Image (cartoon, rainbow, N blue to C red):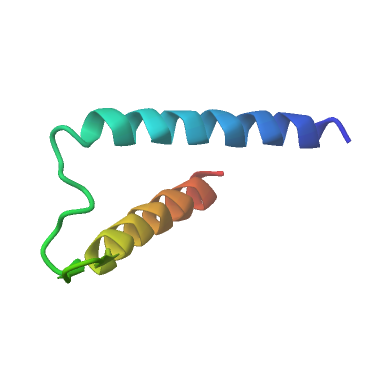
Length: 72
């Protein structure tokens, strides 16, 4: 049972670091406004679906988890 609180703390720290990188990195890399993201603007509404952003984030997370599992 001692491992579960440590795991929650680790997950929290990873989320904090990811949020900080997203905040600071957003100034240099316009993640969320990539070619391939769908934006439909009408008179009263805007629809935004970040397809390429989702794919890139998925690839990065997959690589990180693969490397984590590989070296663990």
